[in-house]
Image: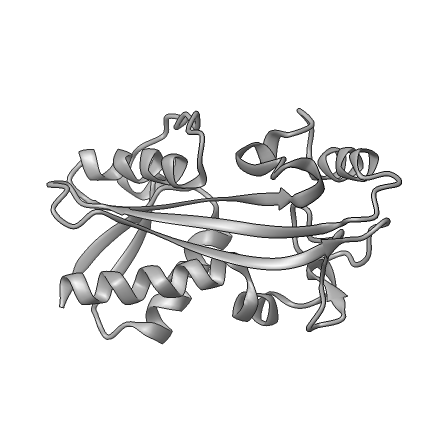
Length: 197
């Protein structure tokens, strides 16, 4: 059995990754969290790119002898020069609601509302023999007001044209089929399976 540690305490992310491994890999893999391996410190995120932050987080379990996996994701808005980018979660200094309020304020009277969600995932080995990163992206537009009560982050404002809805208006399973994180996870599991087979 192969143990991998997802560098998070977020139960939803852990369950999501477990589900993807079951669906996409024939390897006997157990997904653990930072809490499972007794790591309770905060991990600094001071990279300039999603990839740098993901590598930094995945390196923590790798230093403890595990295969470390981590993601870093966010929203990049064209009219804002790619902001909020790596600062997406802490952009306003408040919570998701505050971040969405700030986004609406910054885009007030802005006709170009193209945006993309980005997710970078890193896999770091204890000996750094096969380290790699993958990236998933999903393109949409930012609405002028929130729609839907599901999802998290900027989902109530992120309109995905093929669905004709925001990410906050669709269930998680449907979202995972097209989302940036879903795309990155599929790429990561495919590559990791090749490396470990």
